[in-house]
Structures are given as C-alpha cells and as structure tokens.
Image (cartoon, rainbow, N blue to C red; front, side, top):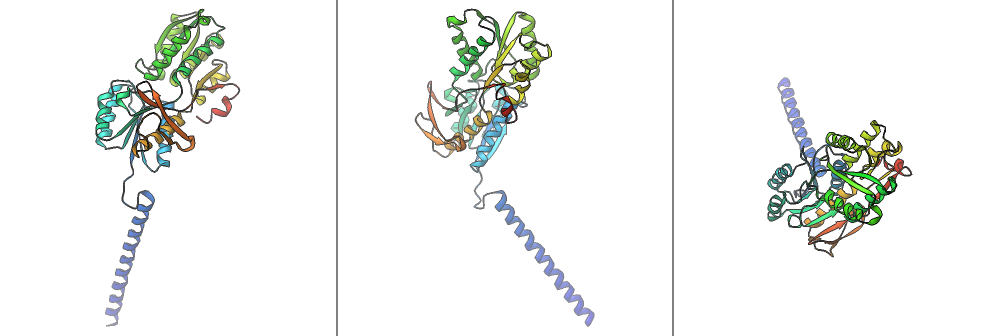
Length: 352
C-alpha cells in the first residue's frame, strides 16, 4: 500500500513538472512576440531599395543609410541589387518586389526609361515609387532624391581639372554606364562648362565607360593612357571609376603627370590623395542619400507627401526637407558637393 502511494505521488509530481515546463514555453513565446514584432499583430510596412549592382562600396553605404532610416521609423528594409548593372536585372527584382507586396520601392536606375513598365505596374498596385541618385523618368516615379545640384556637380569638376592642369591640355572622362542618368546629366553640364572661352586650351578627347565595374574601369583607364600619351587629366564622376584610375596612375608612377579628380569615397581615395595622384575630389555622403530616401519613402507611404512641389516632411537627423520642381517632375535635394583634399581626408576616410 505504501509503495502504491509513493508511485502515485511520483506520478502527480511528474505531471506538475510537465505542466510547469509547458507554462514556461508559452511565456517565452509571448516574450518573443513582444521583442520581435508588433504585439497588436500588425505587420511592419516593407520598404525596398534597389541599387545598380552588387559589390559597389558606394551602393552598400547608400543602402545602409536607407536601412537606418527605415528601422528608425519602425519599418522593414529590403536591400536588393543585381549582380550586373543592367536594366533587365533591375526589372526582374522589381517584379519580385511587386509579388512580395512591398509598400515602397526606391531605385537607383541603370536606365532612365527601360524600367518604366515595371515601375508603373508597381504604382498601379499601390506601391509608392521613388528614385534616388540615378533617376528614372518622371512617368516612372513619384519623386526623385538628388544628392546635389547636377549643374554644380558637372561644372565644379571641370573647374577642378582646369586648375590642376594649368588651363591647357587633353582631358578624358571615365564614366559609369552609358545609360546612367546621373552620369550623363553631369557630363552634359561638364560640356556646357567647357564652352566658356577660358577653357579654349583644354580638349576633351574621350568619354570612356567602365560600367561601374572595377576591372573594366582599370582596363578603360589603361586604354586612355595608351591612346592618348599626352593626356593631362582624367575626370571620373563615379566612385568605382576614380578609385580604379587612382590605382592605375599610382602603379604606373604618373603622380603629377596625369591629374585625377571626380567623385570618390574618402575611404577608397585617401591613399591617392595622400600620394598626390588626386589633389582633390568631391562627393556627398552616400549614407545620407540613402537615409533621406528612406524618410521620403515613408512620407509617401504615410501620405505626408505625394511628390508635388511645395510639400515638405521631416527627414530625421537631416531636418526638414522640401519637394521642389525637377523639369516636369519633382525632386528632393540633399545638398552641395563637398571637397575632399589633404587637409580633411584623414577625418573622413574612416567615416565612409
């Protein structure tokens, strides 16, 4: 009898322990819900950014800024980029994002017009669409986020190379892709600046395209040096291109013989500024471009703005930003290009 009672008590105790374990599991599940999602059951809104291609440090920083903004705002950031910088690859990603029913798509375009059918389809499905850095045409987006005034970006690079080469000699431009909206616009302004009589002794001999790929940009730089042995300067308005050109000029010991300027990342260009290959160059903070785009995407989704000139919204640490005219469309301007040289490169090279 006593043995039977002990067995019964043991069985009851085991049942109690099992019940306690079950209660503990339920508590942990509830804790996970509180820490990992919305306790009301409402899903986070999804904000996607598409860069030109993978393996681009500038693009990685831009997407980082976008993600920071979206996470500050409580949303989910989706970061996408194709392996190759083509419109076709971006279109495939856009179709995938439409199927995922994202709330907004921000795109750095590989082509201004080719993305239009896919982006219009996205807008027809209620997805808010904006471009940043490299624009799509105005029928393909609600607003564009511009890193700086395109006219100033173009003209200031000609002014720089003019000063570097002493006002005379052959120069070349090493661009990204031939379809890149931003690159082509800047180059147009460079050509307009060159029409000024003060540049009459400067000859633009070639516009080369490295497709924002390091190896191709290296090859194009080497081809420029072979084809134009009297070349005095190279303008590379692309972070991949200017770093590639800097390496080629350094490896060939051409410091001071062929001048280099353009748009570059301080972290990648510090050694070329320090060794004299590039006296100075320009850029904006790509993290800020992405960050501003994240806040603009959120403002579109929440109905704070529609993309019409005159509207304004809060852009987090960047303060209040206004939507302004951009031809037959609208844009949001980040600010002026910033000059990096030997006097300040040390303080910026560890930032981005």
